[in-house]
Image 1 (tube, rainbow, N blue to C red):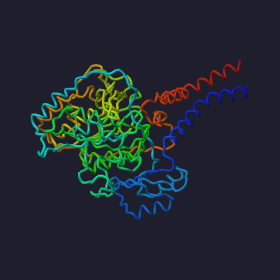
Image 2: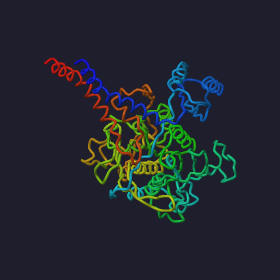
Image 3: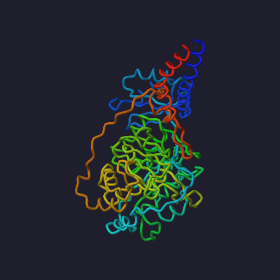
Image 4: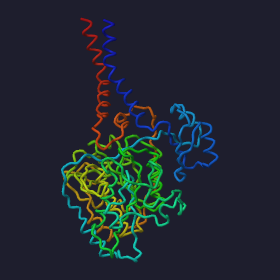
Length: 498
């Protein structure tokens, strides 16, 4: 009987142990091997000597410095045990945290049925045109949207014939010199953080970055501007996703940092991962300090991100707009949702836009929804360049068009309305420079922890065509098992006693 009891005990315990082991293995596969991000406390003074000593003591080499956010990217000179490295470096009272360089992915899906939603864009364009003069020679403010993605076909007609592509006027093309002294050589249209080069060509298998950029371009004004006029918005291409739509936290932070330092007012982020990063949180907080709007896709798992967060869209930084995908007037079935962590919806099913090779096509996903919001935010900066990014965000959310089918799925329960947002902007009477103070509250958890009910799901980055991992269901099953286990033992003992 005793042998039967132990066999039964082990049988019931195996699924729970398997869940924990696989969750830990999944997280390890979502790291860049032997690369780490060290975040120092905001008040810590970090000198080159400090970094050299840290690198020497722990056999690391410094790859990237983000001094404004006190974060630094290191690579181990030889393979090391991360837990041991973290324990050792944590003894330094000036270090806030050390974390792996996590992988993230683009957030689009295969083609789906297209939808037709009236966002009031035409009326918004006309309202701005009535108030602005976009003629050659006229010094009009043309905000920059940084598309942090897989790159862009810079030779596509939509960009070459409409002057929608950002051009770094301080840089002389192809002369091998950093003319503007910003630390990047020949960065005429942006930068490629994957290959560390000025070539931002979109090699993604689905043309993800080009598609997103085309939505920004076409949503920020009609594509048929005449030669006597300039479009109001420019697209800066920052490539950090590779040909299969994968990137790293370190490259994402570098792209965010570049965008801010080179004048972007809106940052579009159609990518995400489910593991929290303190360093990424710091970078997004820095974008808030610099009065930008940070637009992020909410993800395509069809889950409630209030319970299963995706980053950066789930960060609580006040300039973040988390965007879900709508299909006409309802939530697209694949779109994530959350009354607290998703702000607004925008069309994301079957969106027609630019693709590499001077072509066009349809893609679906919250990746396609985010650039609608980015385009609107940029248009609002055209109309009111003195506004803070926070105020632009508040006006976009305050004017969302409500639909019963979206109620409860986001903070606004509505879909973006270009016309209403521009109308409100033009009649604004509040303090346009107001923004609340924000001090990040960093999430603290063990790197190897799987005790959190959402950790199994969060340990696998959300991809463009990835099926639901079912991680949260596994976590729920384990929790239910733990509750029922005592009753199972009682029943077993009763049966054995007969």
